[in-house]
Length: 157
Length: 397
Image 1: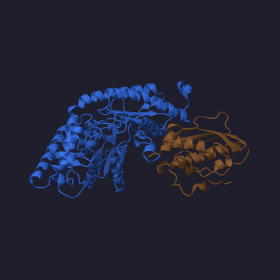
Image 2: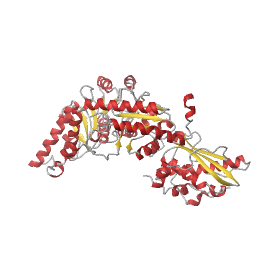
Image 3: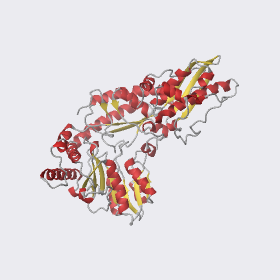
Image 4: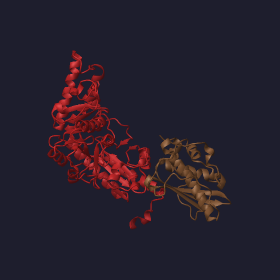
């Protein structure tokens, strides 16, 4: 059911671990629903110079985290903000429909980590999409089928 | 038994391979002896004869009369027939059904369907080992209760229910008792007479028979409507041309399973207990799900905290090990197994469950291999998990 790329990023995940003194951290998901993604960013001159992750979840969640850290590295914050869940899924050569929410988590983790950095810098956070997970985790409905194009993740400042 | 040598198959509760002796026994009934048992010419009469002798053989294995054995398309049909057939046939008498919260979906969903049709259903809770309490069950009985359905053994956690006590309670109250014995028949002794069972479901592919064929045992005198209406097959109770080869396969597989039942039970229990003890001792933050003793000889179900089940399965698959999990990620929903939630596991622990179910081709060497591989897999996944407190903190938890 998974592409070779997903299996590769599951078996050999890139950038696993934590960053000491990170400039931004974003955690999304809920253990009740079976996945938590935490992303650590090192940022210099508005550019992401390092990214690491820790994830509790299925194969797709681990592969999406791994791919997301690969995609953000070297990008400016504006560029990284525009990485959509579809972009993560496409880079993984596709995800099964039921697993698309893992790529949504990856997009949300990037946004959370960038906004964590902005808040730490005394800047106002950029507008995030409404998270699909409820605060208490009681309702863990799957997101709607992916809509629109890869451009949907455009800056919402 | 032909499996790829590098594959270690530990998912026998999902399905088993069809034994080669069984395939041999089935083959003539596809081509040479294909006659419809309902027709009158010679090759048809031969078909009738073998179906009836298969029926006698199955009856012997269950302690039943041949006239009480009805061939179906498998466990799901048998369960649906029992639940809906008894509920509808006795509707004038009452509209209340009692079952448990850990039944297979083939029982739970027909029960929920009947709720929509105006029946009331009690889903009994279970204790932390998965046992139904007969006292609680008796308290749930009302004068409207017409059916009690409690499984003989649970497919996920292997817990063996007190079917004999429940059967007696049902009989004392004049209520029909059905048991889903799909995981039990061919694996532990089951007797419809000793356990006062009125209806029993079984499925051939769980004991090295073919898929797509099963049985509903119906005690003589039980009020039940047909599920499938049509031809006069199965004494007017189950329409549809008999699955001739499948029926031969089912009875042959059951005969072979019964011959080595006790020997194989003892052998699998040893493998099972070694697997359980080995995993619990080598992996911290792990727990056994299900009852430690009242348990199917081939069932191991363990939760590993801080990791998710599908990741475990994918990692095992890379080593050629086939297993199963109660995690949501393999079920197509975000809810983990209803059975693991019913025994009180928190969601996040239920997501980290691993089910290994043994069969007769499993060996001591395979258990050693699995015991050598699983701890490393869990350690690797935990190193990735943001929930894991870390090795150094383990002794304080």
